Image (cartoon, rainbow, N blue to C red; front, side, top):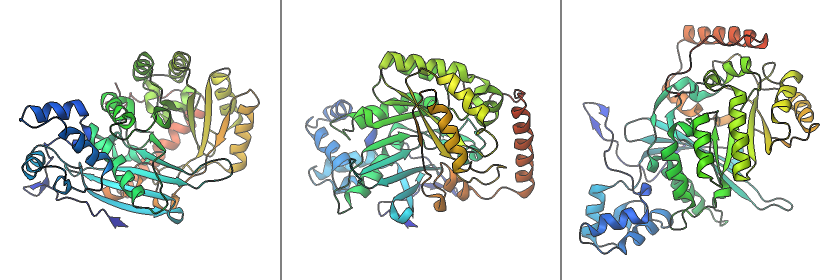
Length: 409
């Protein structure tokens, strides 16, 4: 493990972390910075210098920005944070091809991002894909996801989302091979569409040529099925990719695997995604985490095929990452391949993904869950028993009687 050299001191009061009230610089656009500067009698062109330093320079603090007068740098430092990340721990896997970062925020909570490197191969350039978080914890509570064990803490600020990206960009710049960020995926901790305003502000910054300048089609926003959020995106007509963490096409089973299905059933989710694809002309991506004996049967494949048949859609099948305190394991590759074949037989494009970074717990939330501490053995046993019972009922077609998770609406 390696700590970030740019770490800053955690503010503590009475032995507890205190949230820093200063907004993060990365959350500001050019117009906002110009307005702030002119209100203080500073020339508007300084805004361009600040943004260049935040997004493209080598500075690790406001004091390092040599293009600014010292008095202005001091004033900026009093009003804004250079980074919202108080500390950062990196863990590497796959011979350095996977980098997991645990970011500590000013109020002591932790979030995660994962930077994955894909070397160039015949006919395809090298890719560097970053998976980022939109919330600290998650309200959805999918039982096969480590973040679900943490529960929901709070939404991230725009700058807290963007500073995960800035961290990865800085690491890529430090390489000697000229690597640069090629793709960003909102698939880390949290449900992006439950923090949609901040996510949209982040996407705007990532797409803005004056800031990161990443093309919208290189950005993917995942949701586990927040239908009002999907409908809102459709009205806005974005060109980034919408992806649905579907995991099961039968409501009884999806009630267990994706608890917000009790609020927005799978057919309603797919109908909203279908309308989005028609309105934007952009293919919707569907993800299925393949869980042995739970959602990988022929009946599950046929249910998904019937649900998506004829849609502008693509399905990704991903073996479940090992997560403590669940009764499940990943589907075997022959079972996944057979599942894929049934979808392909009705014309649905399918990709089988391979897991990355299993030895470092690269699945979303695993490092943060480890830092939070091991639950007591009785709690683990109770959770396993409850999941096993719910899963057994679901496979018999019985809908869940559990309430919709708090915070989902």
